[in-house]
Image 1 (cartoon, rainbow, N blue to C red):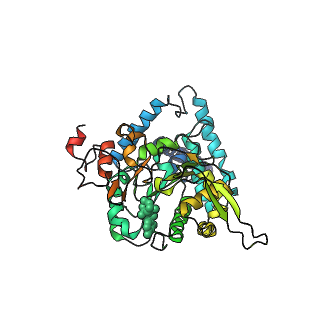
Image 2 (cartoon, helix red, strand yellow):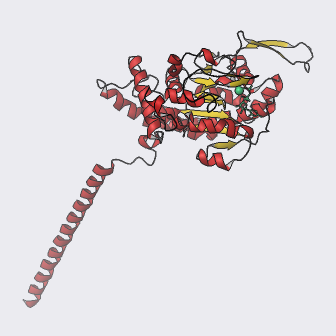
Image 3 (cartoon, protein in one colour):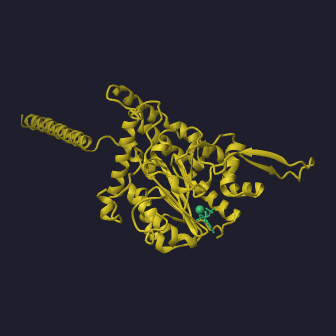
Length: 412
Ligand code: UDP
Ligand code: MN
């Protein structure tokens, strides 16, 4: 009997213990579940480190610059009837579909050449995350890479002026291609000086060497547009962004302005061939001193011809400067025509004829000293002694709230 009671109590305590364990497990599962639900509510879903949000580009860091860009962009949008506002509230399903498509499309990207995988990946993600329809996405400042060609001797006389003016509107996007190490300007530009190790001097090889570096730097980036300028250009950054917004970076675009009134005719040196006949070729080129822009699609077509140091070799072959070499590659070899944009200006044009009421519409300006006279923009502002090149005055005319601008201009 005692034995039976003992057995019974053993069975009872076993069931009791089993029940307690089950209860503890249920409470544990509930706590884990609640923690997960709370975590998801606060942080959302994780997608392995490459979420669409993470791949969106940084915006400019200065509030002033941001204000300028958004002010100009919104005015452009209203002027164009908001043609680039591709996602409207009436089509939420389109936005959803695009989000699914962008993720589903990712595996195909690995079929691109390895060296440029990241560029393609970022580029594609940028594209797909920005737009919800098949229309080209709206261009943003951060879609651009602006390269400025300069040289040691011009750091103080030209670069400093750029850094104090238009560079402030595109600090993250602008890079200076020079031929020396310069700690002072490296610091002022937050590391945006590139020592190309090309020779100093205004001769073809040195200039083509720098242009080749600028081109390769763009290819290694994830940017949609490459715009080159000389260090004697003033770039009207918001206008440049608006200009590119009219074109798609996935198509071939070569935007700029020629400095001659008819296409250039050159004779290719075919003396090595048995025919001994020099072949004449005719093409347009955008003058480098006014600046020009190239879409990513076009740059990728140029890559096998002009990448990996081959730009200099082509310059050597035709024996013409860097901007002519660019036109030769694009118009003659690739058969992509130059699209003339009148809003680019080099100092080969008389600057005084650009009317002040159109300054906001111009993409670039320049200046030069011709014999004893300056070819400069005619603009009110600082006196001629303080600002002989008129760049500070032009900048203050366009953006009077900058701290370098006099109060009288600000109240205009
Ligand atoms: N440049 C250069 N090395 C030099 C001289 C000029 O890289 O030794 C660059 C200069 O910084 C500028 C461009 O080449 O961006 C054109 O130079 P510049 O305006 O002096 O001459 P231009 O060709 O306009 O007459
Ligand atoms: Mn010049």
